[in-house]
Image 1 (cartoon, chains in turn orange, brown, cyan, green):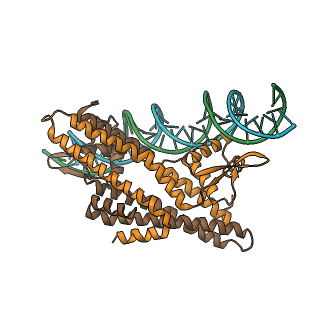
Image 2 (cartoon, rainbow over the protein chains, first blue to last red; image 1 turned 90 degrees about the vertical axis):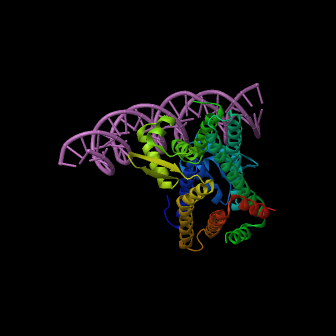
Image 3 (cartoon, protein in one colour; image 1 turned 135 degrees about the vertical axis):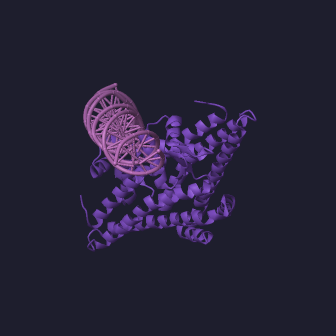
Length: 178
Length: 178
DNA sequence: TATATTTTTCAGAATGTTCTGAAATTGTGG
DNA sequence: CCACAATTTCAGAACATTCTGAAAAATATA
């Protein structure tokens, strides 16, 4: 495998993208496939992925499907060719938007629901019995709920402001950070 | 284990916090200990953690140390007691700040360094040979770098604006999101 | 310093995740 | 409908992570 030049750069990026994803609870292979497709000027088929990353057909298939589920890649059919080709979203901004939308849905949503349920349960507790503890817990639950609101606000900024491009957003945020 | 009332709410929260952390690449037990300490009005010692979460002394010790490393909990000594007690940061905002500061350091930093190295390597590639590909890759590398700048901007907003409280920040962001 | 208590460490066990490869399924053109 | 090419599925293997429990190290007390 090339370790220098443009192919070296590609391999370095693919590997790092995979490592980073692993710390985010996303499988290394899924992220490596994504990085490969993101860089590739042309769509790749399953066999291309198998060859370049040296993974099995099963793994390639499963991970490609997951990337489709995330909405990070798309299928492409070609006349006179039975194979399916895959192409990644090339707009880094749209890609990021997709990722945080999915993470909001998969992670922020459930914790918010749980917290609301926790506040409810705290209210069901009979008065006087361990009242101080009930109050303390309730306060902490709603503090985290407020935090979730803030995160939702960040997500909304990212989604809405992104249309105007990455650079303007970065600037606007820098001003806010004074 | 209580499934209703205030203790039920506590257990529900602790479990959910652990599950959520797992999808973030943080060990379930570490997050459960953190949730337990976050809710607890008083500091807890290693044995409290072992009893309440039914984990071994080794696991409790290792995970408590990791939480100390993250800066999410603090030690507390008590006169006439040899045990160490642990207390979590109770300010949800400071807690969040700590988490994203750590994640920036551990994750954003390395990918930025790698991307810069990738751009360098692309420039080392001899001209004319696969020039179109070199240009395409370089474009994608710098697109992701721009994205990292945007994320850094978000982090800065969060760090700086947080001092003024959570609610004002949420409001300011909502305005930006129009 | 000797002793008692608590914390840390770490080899091996238990658990959880991802991959492989072959079989089953799906879809296509003749 | 058949033969073929491609994709999906899934049981078991390989790998990675986390936990346990006991021994070693650290720390405090007298």
